[in-house]
Image (cartoon, rainbow, N blue to C red; front, side):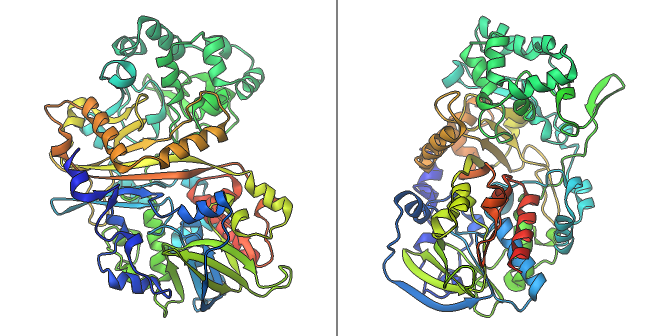
Length: 629
């Protein structure tokens, strides 16, 4: 095993400032932080995201229907609002509430994790005294030109300067270093470690500036370690579909929305090679809800998968607006679109931090997103009794119930577990900004229809891993800006987005340290099984792995992909953060019935409309606050 495991981790948890080990006096997060001054979750490495200790009580409540938590301590704390969930939606709800009702209104935010922001997780790594920033989940603004007035107003309040990204994002970085999209075939699955300078799909297209392949399909296919039959079938997939494209537009539109992508591959194109089918299944990564084996052709097309290149007239069959118009200029085909550059060095964690900064001004220096990039927050400030907004971490809510008849009650009682002890607080109103499928388990007297609508929801597991390396000479040598990796747990290994701002500098030369960003959207073992079943299987498998399991896979992955003469795992890897989200992207929509107010309880979170985007998290927070009156 590597020295990382021996030096830094006990079963994936950094020894310093382990959140679950810190004492708590039952009254405030500040007491805990003061007892352990080094408490600073962004710098923790190892198992992050759904980290050990974050979900145990919630699982006990949902899976075992546990209701007995021992004696409950009434903290005699009463708030104007309690927000359950400290992610982007929960933080926005608290902010909106004070905007609507006054900065003096008392708000308590409860979250089960050891850090705020939810999926907007900040990862800090340090190499040689230099701090490297990465995102552990929610990473960028998507389609900001379509943001609603509510979202734009919030971003303006937070000091977001959209024009800043025009210079902060180094769009020429990949071209300057000749970094493009490749495919890595690993020995374990494909019989040989081989890097081919072609992605065989359009997933890498969302990275602004990443070089497009120069190899033709024919040249690239011949370099793969597939069998001769596999190569022939892969080329057939890449060049296929022309007979379908001859259908009239309306028939083609109906065809792609009603036909299975995998049926198209198997029955229309005659593909049965396991290597080709694996490549096809693993090209959606985190763009779709599950693997392409459960998608229609239309759903798969939106992920840019194997053989459905949106540069072809397949796009003509999509609904208007799904794709921007492609045109031809100087003999090259390219997309007329908005550049995908709205990315902070720590992803959307910057937005979460700015929301906290606005509500708890003493948490750290900086008055706008650019100024807080390098700001180290003082977590001892989060839950001080003098704050109008208090943020209490490591606190899992297990029961939310009106003090009387929901139609007339003037208070809501909230019970939560911290350090295996039960506490109760009260509020005039509650916004449930947690995973919506948990709400029926912790709000026991919901109307039956609403309860049923929320129970139908599920989540898509995903994983963002950040790996701090002392240099990226091997990536440069192999020309890797992003590698598609269909044989590995992490289906993508890439350089991070090249963004510098607020005194933070993205890596400049291959001799400098950097963060490699690895992605995984784990799939179920049974190809073609129902999505929810696959999500469940993948989730259980994910949560059963230790840090050592992940580290060993990353060792094998990077060691097989990169030349040994330039990369040695024990020498070059400084630290790893595994941001695993067993409950990641939203799946299903609770509808109006599911997200309707219930007495003094309203429902926020992007789950409420079946989305996983920052803008919907904010919009649902605004709606939930307005519904409280």
